[in-house]
Amino acid sequence: MRYATLIIQVLILFFILSCAAPQQEKGKEDLPNILFIFADDMGYGDMGNYNPASKIPTPHLDKLASEGIKFTNAYCPVSVCSPTRYALMTGQYPWRSWRKTGVMRNYEPSMIDEDTLTLPQMLSNAGYQTVGFGKWHLGTTFPTTDGEKPVGYGEFRDHLNGANIDFNQPVSDGPLDRGFEHWLGFSCASECWIFKDNTIMGAILHDLYTIEAASGTENLEKIPLEDYLPYLTEKSVNYLREYTEGDQNRPFFLYFSPYVPHIPLAVEPGFLGKTQAGPYGDYVHELDHYIGKLLDEIDQLGLRENTLILFASDNGSQFIATSPEDDPGNASNSMDDFKENIDPDAHRPNYPLRGTKWTAYEGGVRTPLIASWEGHFPKGAESPDLIALNDILPTLATLVGQKIPDGMAKDGYDLLRSFFGEEPGNTKRESIVVRGSGEIYGMRKGKWKIVGNGDKENPVYELYDLEKDPGESEDLFADFPDIGEMLENELKDHLASVNK
Image (cartoon, rainbow, N blue to C red):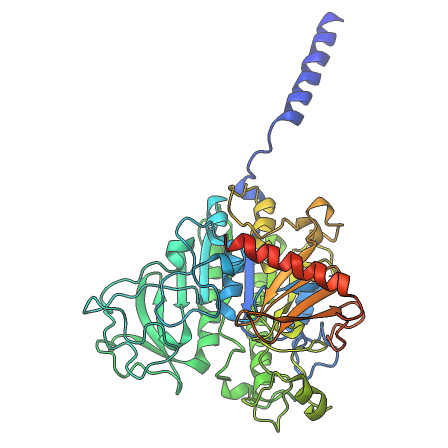
């Protein structure tokens, strides 16, 4: 009897100690693979799952949404490329970086400080293989033959682009220096250069861009821009096949970031005319096709059950409306043009939202966000929870058992509960700051949103009730000045704290 009592006491003590012990890191065998698909300038209303009136067939993305959870209040903090990519990679607002506004220009150095934790670094710390394909657009340092800055530094295009690039030396301060083990793609499309890991091995070709002034490009692979999406898909598929044939003790993080449907609209000839939304719609349809190839490969390789798949866009579409008859280059940000000149039969990429890329209106900063993980996330679910792309890093950190160091991911929240379809709990995001391409800011809190309009030094704020008016058509600031001023003061306090 005494021995039995002693055994019971030992078991009780063991139970108490095990409950009090800190959470241990997850074993690699418990971690899911992660695929992050990042569209470039795709609108909130392009997918049929988000917009039943869409004139673009997106069967593969629609199926992905039906297999997981879609978020209807997900945000890019900024309505242009580089700042949103910075937020995704760091969990921080981009105005904390040296690049306060706008996008990265040719050959500029990394937007991410060396000591800033990034999403691939965090996942690498958790034991992941980290691989990226496509567009980086967060800065990379290129070697030159004369020790000077590359010709065209700080520009978007230069007719002497590449004149002093040294193709015999590696690039630096790029994706491999910010957490990726392997990379294939470019940093900025107008630079043209494609690098594998840190070696320049190719260039994209398009009428807008030039490499004619560069010497020593004879052995580089030349890839027409319309071939870039299928090229990246093929390389990503090859990686997955090699992964399944090799050592699978480490899960993978695959970042698939094609340059689609960003202009120039380099649609493969076989996809032209396949939609009722013009070349833009054809390009989105082509993107869906190649995403389908990637997802089908994951299925065929038996990886789907343990692969968490995320899809988002880095900002809204630049087009208000597109149709087969329209010139897709004629996009307007004018609300008056939208009301008066819109073709009722045209496709509206950002439907039902106002504004486009470059603006702080919803059409510029709200993104479709889908998360699928078989057997874990709910199927066919829809979440209204407020979420930003800067929340991805801390959310995945919790999933893979990583602690975020103090001072990192300052503007991100762990919203993992929302992905499981649960109430967010104490970590619920209450508000999100957004910005257009310049210095016009906005803030959403609950159902309310303010957005600056006019002079960046002394903006006049508009107030919208997004629950009743997602298209931001009725400015309510005069009707609810207390709410408008509260949000304005919170926004100013945030910006002042960042700029101390």
